[in-house]
Length: 82
Image (cartoon, rainbow, N blue to C red):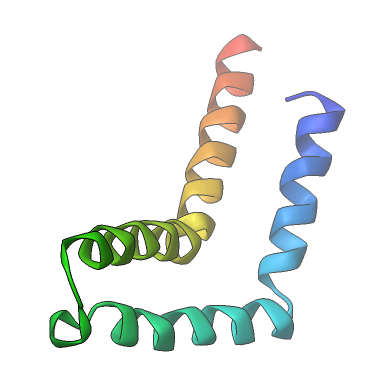
């Protein structure tokens, strides 16, 4: 893994450990319940808008796992290269 990639992963992992990140995730989790309500959906357009919102929220909630997987893959690639 090159130095730039290591720094990238280090900065993300530092962010994930902050209290602010945890507060942000809690806010997103609470928002999912509101957005995921079919009874509040006005029409088809609103349904698709909510679907998009949920997709973005899911990406945010899963980013730690995605970064961990990418980091593990990069480290495995480095180990194979040696």
